[in-house]
Length: 285
Image (tube, rainbow, N blue to C red):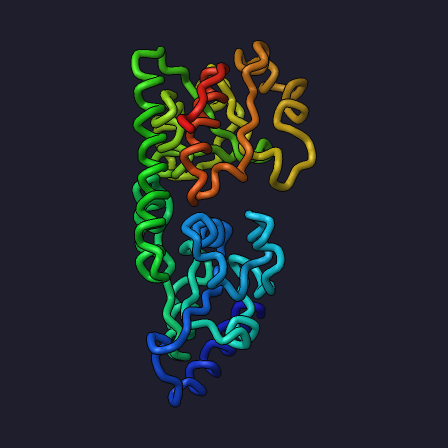
């Protein structure tokens, strides 16, 4: 029912938009529907152009003062229109092309790029900078991400590759697979993802987990649905407690905040590397 109402709202907005012109001749007013694009706007010095955000956009602190227009998957189209934006941005998500088409029909430009890779993130930063007139600052931020990637590559070169399982839920067991963004981060951080098939975020069984027996478990679940850490959930659980990583205390939390696909992802990459290697790898200043 919610999905049907969302589509009907967009149709109504499109029909009422015929007399609207392009936003190109108006002062820039930007609504951001994802934390990554909100962070990017502030990082490139364009935070003052924002007039609205999603409920999940909580960084930097200044973003919390902006009006909320719903969530990432359930944006409130009427609330967006009421803010009279000239540009709506966000990571590509569940709302899909229907949202973009409805907003464009209402005379509002949109930018919803793919950010499921480090290259995709730097491209997003640079293109967003171009669209809001902060190209130089955006190039500086993108260059900083790339510099941290290169610095980490030099630090982990020659280290033994630890076998890693990136876990997002323990019941059922949901993990990072090939083609996912966490899979790329593990590889760039000098680890080897033990999941080599099954899609980007497969669900695996306990027997499969035991057969994999990774060196390190990365906990990507603790700050999501569960109030317990992965360690607390599995250290005495049947099957899990047989894993070498559990027995040796090699379960390490990777906070999702620094893994957001935005301007802080260079630091997030180092956070993954520290979790894998268990030492004080630090990014350049």
